Image 1 (cartoon, rainbow over the protein chains, first blue to last red):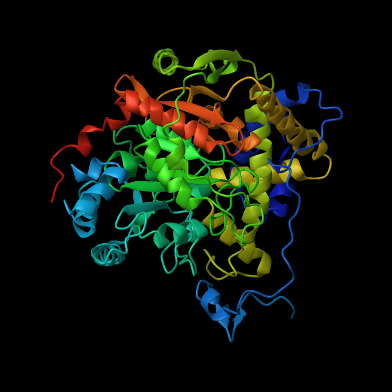
Image 2 (image 1 turned 45 degrees about the horizontal axis):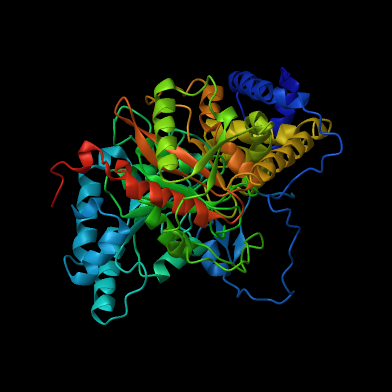
Length: 95
Length: 489
């Protein structure tokens, strides 16, 4: 399946990635190659087969709703590119 | 030479005082410096390793040695290590200092091991040759013009070259087993959920699994026993008790039945590798096992299903890298969107971007059923095939990889050829089964790996079979020339 440029552009937008026009067509070709590889899979009759999302068919396991983690904001924010007064800084969103 | 000894041998030497952990650690640190061109390590923790070695020697002197006291272990740079750079082989995390230890790292340290460094890997574990690493490719110690395999290539090459006693790796589609095969070492991917994923940087969460990369099956059993077990921080972690794997090791293969998957011996398998594998199968027969040919009808759809599921999960997992809370941030962003887009585009390499894009595509409206749902259904059919097989056989054996280590750069332009390097390993991840690779011989002076696949939680069965094979043969004792040359302090 050949992926058209407008689809590639849309996916780039959804995934928050930026490509130059040249890169866009190259990545479109690579994506098409991968989809060709997976095409073979479409010939399998999977009617009535339950999709498998976990190898052990485990469902969501919830822990008791008790706070166990201490507040370690200062430690975690050491890895942040820009913070001020315990807040993460981003460019202005509202004028 | 101490650097080529197994953990078991090293523990004995430490116990009888043949050498100290400090001497062992110094020896590895010296070798790492001398062989730095192999590019196995992203970070070498010289200072803290020497401190930990001295502590281990003191603990041993006081009779308080842990199960791995004083043994220098390297961690794949995908495991968070407290106050140490943790990059996942990506520019995105080139400046990331982890504020906590992954459960695996904490458990191994608690057993007294010395963390010697963090090993190189394909970016976010996406690759089969270690060539997608932001920090440059790792070279195969058997032939430095060749790849070590991937994504845990740094770990595999470090063990093979005698640059650590053992290493940790992760395996999403073959990333422990394939580099283990290419570097002539033993690598085990346990059952999905057997080892906690907490603190292990996520690629595809329903496939990712950590495991040991060692010189022998016995060492793998020792490491697995320490790494495995329930973790309240990872809800997908299996709660079952961890067996004493070392006790399994001497179970005889007499009367056991081994399945050979016919579909693994097709045109894609290099002729000389096949010959080596067939010879290994004969050894298992001599050890008393019955060999049975097995058909896994859906196995041929493993690669297609994987290249839908893994990118889909990756696109979700990697959405967290936004340039705000940690990781790379672009310079002078114009607005919030520009910050996200440029930080991600500058931080991720091409292979990672491709997989994010493919994943987002297959999950998008209109394509979900045809791709993602279909792949998840095929995944169940593959699991069912294995379950059927395990009614007849105790475990399966076959090749780990279709060929031996290839030349650096040989497959970088052909992504599909690269993807097909994992053709025999991917099914184990899709089904979530335990599988390992052991060295069983050479093809044109390059190691060939044999894969053993067991039923759920039957790590003991394949470890024992591997150990029986290693007691009978010497392939696991073969080391590359640069691991025996004069690189000594």
